[in-house]
Image (cartoon, rainbow over all chains, first blue to last red; front, top):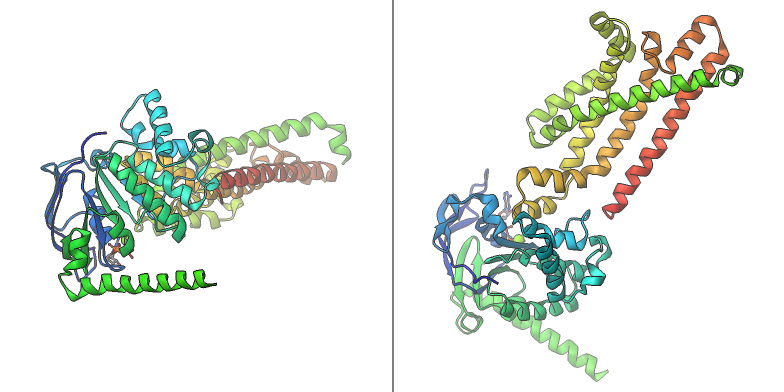
Length: 263
Length: 207
Ligand SMILES: Nc1ncnc2c1ncn2[C@@H]1O[C@H](COP(=O)(O)OP(=O)(O)OP(=O)(O)O)[C@@H](O)[C@H]1O
Ligand SMILES: [Mg+2]
């Protein structure tokens, strides 16, 4: 596995065509090689937009993004994207392709040999805890939600990307499967040296997975820091509320567990 | 019925010509409609022009269009063939356009995001996903084409229409029945098999 790349975002701004206010404004951020960065914030604050500027699905109106010192605007977007893993909430597995073929897409685009691709597909399925023999030849419609999300992750990392973008990749499953996937993700990222940008609006998920958290609000960064820094020293009332709401949820959950136990 | 019983090879031969004419016209029609449908799905500005224009052709009565084409190209297969291709365009282009635009945006997002070139996005993701709708359009176009191809019998283009028009001229009911029966049977067969295809591709997509 190649080492993760360094990503430097400088003064990035995005205004969608026809919009009056910018969706991202003057965003500056450095992501260290191999770092697992989680972007949190309320719905509509621009998390997905930020992610999608990095693989140039959305063009910047201001500022720049460099990966390992190279301005992405100077690269061919198709080639750039083949070097960046991308997993989305909707999973986006192609329903007309078997699981193996879905996972093999980027390695094929990269021109790997057939043997290398076959070996890679099996290794990846095993890595995301899906028995290759059982799952390789299934169609996406024959998978559960959690299995589909796993395949989505396997597909995103298949091309040995140096950058991994994940937009609420566990958004479409129930809480139990979700927490299982999170635990697996935690183990997985230790193995991968990939630089990861992970979007969620689940604060628990952010605290669990992040090396560093970026809190975004209305297209601007409210705070950047390790989970502990953000929890201990919220930079604004907004951040405080975001993580406090979470405390209330935890409390409720404890209470629910308590009740269960007393029955 | 007695005509059919007395001349089975003739009816069969004309049915064969009819089917071949329809198949060839549909093949050409699809080849023309694919780029038009793709264009229409990509360009909100061209779409109303394209669909409007093809819709206008579609509303011209087939006999009137054929008469006009005979003036231009003479009797025989050519005017019929052109009419068939022209009529099918509306149904084909409309469904190719609708099928492509109906592709889940998340699919397109995933395809682009993974680094598929625009050509690969179309060939490997968008067209396969649009296939059920496209086959649906093909089915409707095929049935219409089978019916309209009957007119070939009127202008010397062959096919089962020959029986119907000759039967009308000769007051031979048996001939007319044989021709109509043949056309209907062909339509039912093609409809059934394309319905089956449509279902097959739809199931494959998990729908
Ligand atoms: N393609 C687009 N064209 C115009 N506006 C858009 C587009 N995509 C997103 N927006 C707008 O930009 C803002 C930020 O959207 P974005 O998808 O980045 O939010 P998000 O933080 O990912 O939200 P969520 O948590 O709901 O996914 C929203 O107001 C949204 O309506
Ligand atoms: Mg989003």
